[in-house]
Image (cartoon, rainbow, N blue to C red; front, side, top):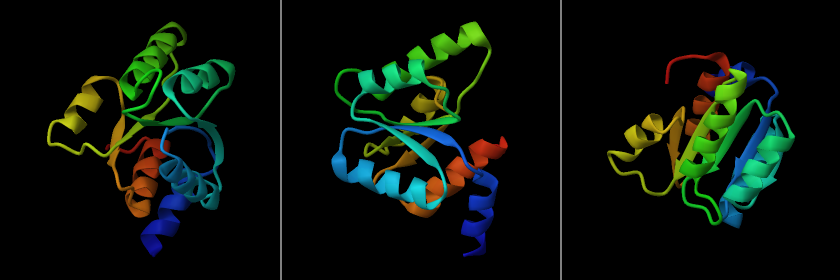
Amino acid sequence: MAVDSEARDQLGSLEILVAEDNFVNLKLITRLLERWGQQVTLAANGREALEAFQRKTFDMVILDIQMPELDGFEVAAAIREMESETGKHTPIVAVTAHALAGKREECLARGIDAFVSKPIAPRELLKTLASLATGAPR
């Protein structure tokens, strides 16, 4: 478990926006993040996620790719558009059950920094978040 404690230390304490429309996945991600010492803001769909992002500054965003209102790609594009005016870059992690070979590349091409497939593996999520928090390569 040394990897987990090292990754938790690297992660620090962040403000993380989580946008997920599936209640079970939302609960799992929230519990993991809170256990790791993170501050979590929840959004049940893409529109709520974008509204939250406009109201508050986040250190990181976790987006389900398939959500009602606006999907994860639309939310990521809107975030990147807002950031083009400020020069800021907020790491975005995509989560999706569609872990097809090209999905990771599609996410990266659309301005998403990392990709975690469902069902979510806690260790994989932690390592992904920690690498983005420290600026390590994906």
